[in-house]
Length: 421
Ligand SMILES: *Cc1c(COP(=O)(O)O)cnc(C)c1O
View 1 (cartoon, rainbow, N blue to C red):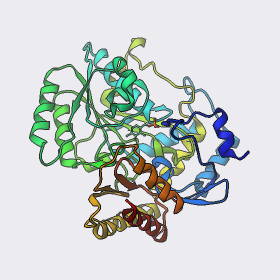
View 2 (view 1 turned 90 degrees about the vertical axis):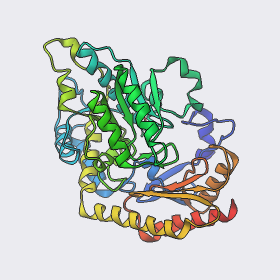
View 3 (view 1 turned 120 degrees about the vertical axis):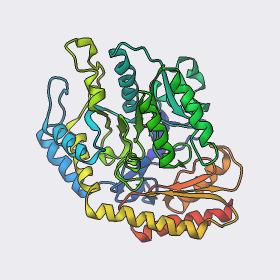
């Protein structure tokens, strides 16, 4: 039996209806932008394995530092203890993050970083003697799959069974050139209740909403309004963080900084699961007290795992290197050129680019997980390119180390797929 067959016996995969999708391709090796299956066929990783491996798979610099760390300190309790990799990471990250950030809280994945941010906001007001029960989040938001994160997420087809158990959330339309006045007025009505603890958003790009992009100046108006109403702002940068929007963090596109930032995905360059909830001194100070119960009593066993911290330090060094910064600019420029070439094609409804993210909507109707989506996926894989269409949207978010020739391969299969739909 090969891996594909053995997989079926005991494994239950994420986000999968196994009756409809029983087969899972076994990837046995990955290097740079390439994934290799058990038959030796290779696939260009056009979405950086869900936006994690932004420096390519098994980057030598990251591997060698993690290997060194493995000989020194593998894992230790982070409550009562601290260690050099966590300290070094905090110092490095603080110099890269927006200046308002002052403290870093560790967890294990994007969803928990959001749950931590939500609990922080609720307790922030609780500690000040206010009971605030509402959170504002965007339509079609995606913030993860744990209960808090699921509550503020908007894609509810999958949340049906849990709806009765979710937090109280006010839904706001994502602003655009047409609805802006309505959005601002709805937002004001929500803030005026005085019951809102936080406004959470994915800055500039809503990944799971098929790479929906919106304007930084619109978002800035909302952040300002929230802060003027003494409501905490949470930037969920789990997807947008670490260079993908063209700046190190999408929050840098606004002058007004959020109170809390969530990070995960490419934080450890795809090496280990880890997440951070970063907050301002003001947020931290609401927990700093002689009374023990005012502290933040939340924690995960693997908080600040030294190997994950080391990978994150190596990743930050790469991100801030001239080579990677130039690559980000190059990929962005290539995306814009491709956009010019493809946008007037009769089967293309819309195209959009932010940083290294390129997306195009096909001018055809289909379900999010419909048949055509499977057909497109199979078409790309057959051509040796790993892309995961979302509904009628085809997009790429390639590793920063992708070459021009490899980018051409992605553009080529995207163009070819227009002929089969
Ligand atoms: C992926 C994602 C999450 C959830 O992260 P997990 O590590 O999958 O739990 C949260 N928010 C955003 C914006 C994401 O893209």
